Length: 74
Image (cartoon, rainbow, N blue to C red; front, side, top):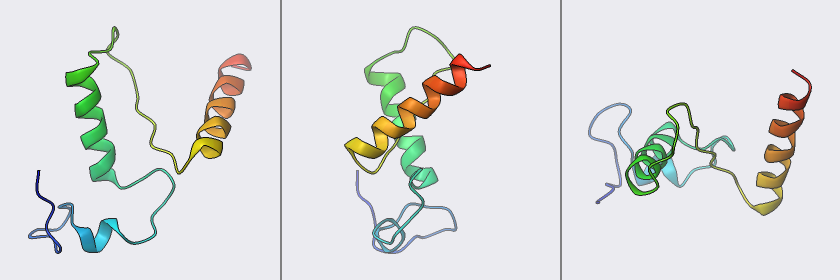
């Protein structure tokens, strides 16, 4: 995979966008790449899975805790 410095079209992944500060949920293009990778490599046992891109171990643990708490109090 090659990622160009500048996007050829609006919405394309590029280094000029990816190396800037972005929301902790990650770039939409990265989310799509991770979802496709997970689908092909890990082949989850169910259709409605989601991938989580986080900024580090502590952030990931916090997001997991929030997710579990929301499920418990539904």
